[in-house]
Length: 197
Ligand code: SAH
Ligand code: MG
Image (cartoon, rainbow, N blue to C red):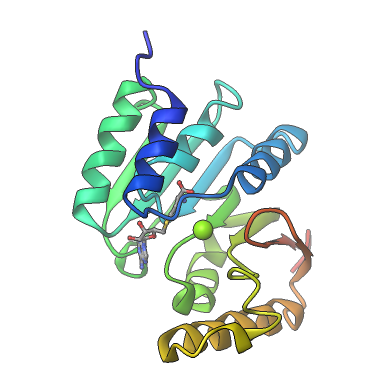
């Protein structure tokens, strides 16, 4: 029996300012997984397990490895995953993704962690993505600031905007991948790895 509802996790995230995926963003991701028959997923940035649970619920043979560096969030994610009886299909690792060595290969890598490190995550985990696989990156519009950052004067925010723009440029210039950007949620990049690279 699942007593905990996804709504409860969404509400908890909202109340505690935990930046889980936005509704239409996660719907897009879930549909993408369905339509492309994705089975093995690596997620960078679990937070409290919301997106991992949503993805795992698409189909019973989906397996997910997800990495979260914050210990408290990791514990909450673990608890949520257990409550959904998904602990045999979601493997959560408590560490900085840049310090973890993963040997498995995946159909999809979902990057939803520190925006300043996206290029590093992408380069590091490229070896873990199958040919023809896809990297999906969240927060490409960063509340609209990537298009127009005049709405903020915060230095750190402006720095992050710069980093995201760099990442977008990096994706566009990467010949081993074809990237499309969609406006759902907070902006999502879909980077398909070429079949021969
Ligand atoms: N994917 C989640 C939301 C993730 S929020 C969902 O939609 O439900 C981003 C998370 O990434 C935060 O919890 C943060 O602690 C984590 N994070 C940031 N940098 C990280 C890193 N280098 N390695 C692992 N986790 C990281
Ligand atoms: Mg996000």
